[in-house]
Length: 265
Image 1: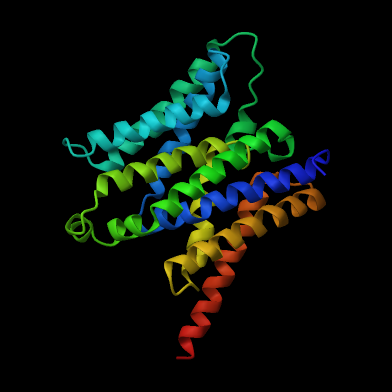
Image 2: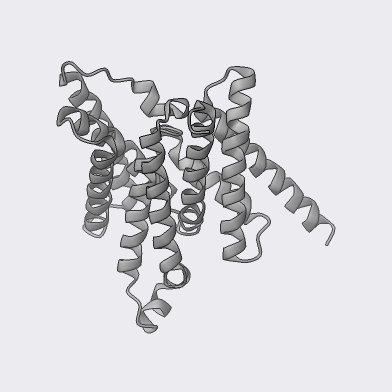
């Protein structure tokens, strides 16, 4: 089955969707979408450094994403608003990454593949990296699910319960960096946040509990990955954007259903 490029692409998309689902819920609840955007933009610098040093793309991306997230967290309380810092870090790291790539000789760099993804070119090795990363993210979120929920709802209550909200935020940051590193080949830098936010936002309109929202987000993401690939194959459209478009259809449909349900009450 893994000899078929479409099968590998579908498995890769499902792996990213399962990792992005629970993490996307916290991104929506904590209003961290721009934080995710900044981390994703920084991934290009990680790709550039990996190419320059002849290292793993995954390792380079993960390293830079963690550095950017740490810098943003450390500087946020020192006279700069978080959105200002994220704007500076996101676009400067993207610009520096593109400049660094221009100095790397003898390397073929497909910018469009990293900006919008190249899911159809996923290899068996990529598939292993994606699923190992997804399993790690799911394990981290599952392990800290209740503390993360409590820290998200009320940091003072979390402190009173003996929890450390900063540690929980660090776990979220680490999970976000891993997800960006594994998803860059699937939907690209510019659409990673869409796979985090749109399925979770779609699930929010129908779910009654946090667990239900995460489950619905996972299903929406997985179905969007498979259906988007099918649509890309039939209509000859880019695979990454097609996946996001299918997720958008789910978001609109679920919100329409929720609106009808509320109007009948």
